[in-house]
Image (cartoon, rainbow, N blue to C red; front, side, top):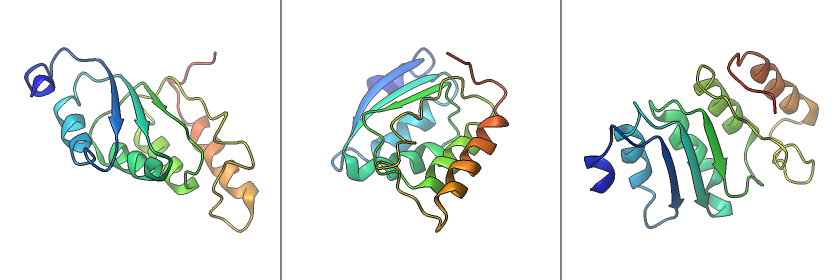
Length: 130
């Protein structure tokens, strides 16, 4: 209720995402789509792909996303998220994601996943180098 009432002033949001409140995130993103810029989500390891799906399907365009622990994310989910946020995303940290033992490769040839992700990243003109 608080977030709905204050939707025009919230630019940063830190939220937990679990099976009890998972239906709230799409609603929140819809209400905050015009102002939300920085999103941090604490999620369980088994829900990371789901979180990326929800954000990708939303009309919310964020500048930064920080998930608690990106460890077992499907490469196609990452790619879809990057495509969806291509015009807005400014901050991206793939350190944990690209670590070989953490990345959930979907292609038979592992290099294709990483190549496709970096190809998409190269199209993102607003990303800032830190």
